[in-house]
Length: 66
Image 1 (cartoon, rainbow, N blue to C red):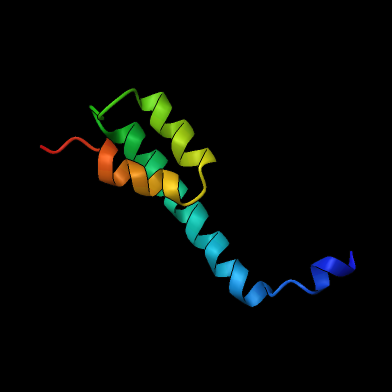
Image 2: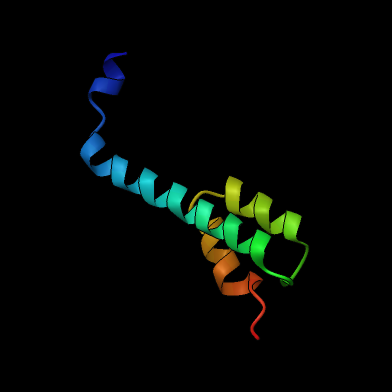
């Protein structure tokens, strides 16, 4: 438990909040969109399990323009 006391939570907490916010926004956008580039279930899995890069990849490559 002493290792957790040494973690700089002031620096890590904002990153965790940003990660969860990106994941939630990405999943909501995937569910609401009519079409995506690729299967929706794949983008949901990528957005939830590949930390910050998954949602960013969805917003760059997964959204259909139009």
